[in-house]
Length: 107
Image (tube, rainbow, N blue to C red; front, top):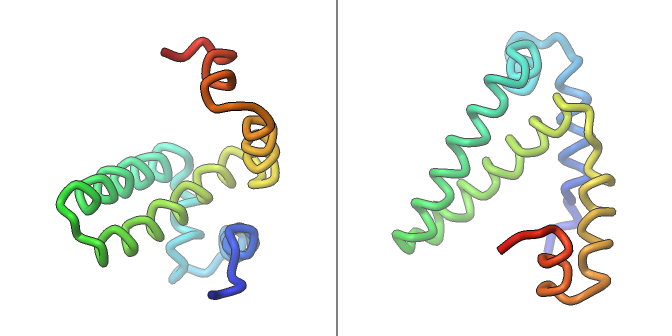
């Protein structure tokens, strides 16, 4: 198992976002702002779902990597660090899923 983490990816995204490198996809997404970053996140989410429902395990792994990357780009563009999401997940796992969901008013 790799020691590579979402925190490592977040750090790399932040470095590349402000690199000014014209060859960097990350820098290009940051320059185009939230509309483009969010569009790419949505596209990757759909591609991930398609891979899942068609039983394409290799595609699911690949698209999941794309999805996580683009999600972290969106979060970075929004100025929200991964640690905030992790803290929210930790808070939610402190109680049952049913109780947590009910506290949000979800159905």
